[in-house]
Length: 158
Image (cartoon, rainbow, N blue to C red):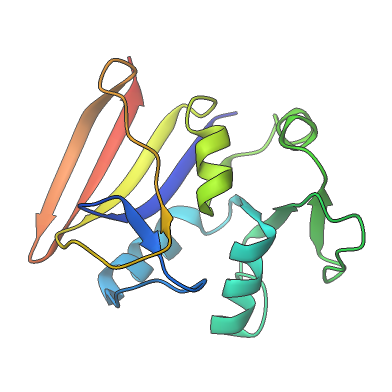
């Protein structure tokens, strides 16, 4: 099964500040929901805690997987926890997985996934976490849907 990555990224590669998204684009939240519903969402501990801060619960209608190095991390019983990305990738290889952040997880997985779903936000955002560079020698843009202030991009490995 495929492994994909989904992220909203500013022109300066910013993806967050103080564990929050530095913009509010309802169409992007709808796109994320539509794209990931029914799938497995893999994320780091900080991203999971951020989602809990926004929603008060894990993402609905998705299997949530948290990767953390903290062996004392406590997650709700319906959330799977792995202590290494290698273990997570091995155990999830038969699932349709979306890597959902944060910055460290994106850096460690961008070369391991098959497809990138990127919402390119048309601004230079202030932030403290950034998305890795998308290497044009590895990735080719296969679709683009432009909107006012942002674009939905899809990249596939060459």
